[in-house]
Image 1 (cartoon, rainbow, N blue to C red):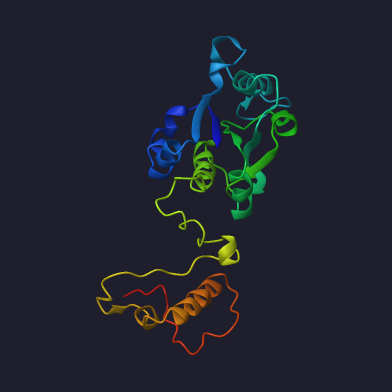
Image 2: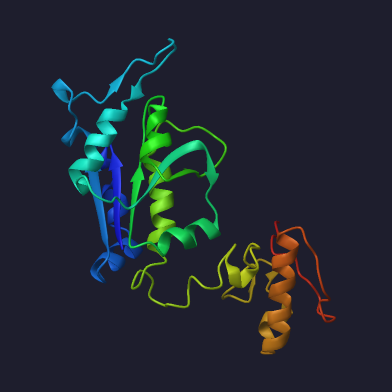
Length: 236
């Protein structure tokens, strides 16, 4: 996959690019590129924004700036699936991540200030995506969130190719949160590990995990098979 992140602050992604799943995906042949709108802006002085029509606080990233950046990278031909980040967009979920990770290329438009001229949403983007119903100072963190969810699905990103299969909200989990995990020591400060996990009975463990996932989702279904359910969250 080729993943292009368009941003006004490419330096903000230095940490992100050093993360192991990203590095491994790149080493395995994928691309993660940072594209600075200022490199293609048609406005003198490197300007990218302007005051909003109708008045109001803040500045708006111009549609001609974004169009020039996309054309500068992809030319006048066909562009990859292009995602604009906005609190008003489709909320990011596992199904959308699966869609995007199956694409050969994706462009992510990361905004700032009051966001983009809405013609970017209407004419230059294929998807409007939100990481949640709240507002941040800019789109850099949402871009990292979206990029990581996609990159970790790519070949070579994770050490174990089975790792992303049974994760929270995945198809294997029926869209539910993942079950709680425990490891050594088996007892600490009087806090024990659920007996079923120490039993060696794989079927009982499977049933317990499924039940815990359902409980976390607020949907209790089926029967625990008689196993005692220990609370996954214990406090002194």
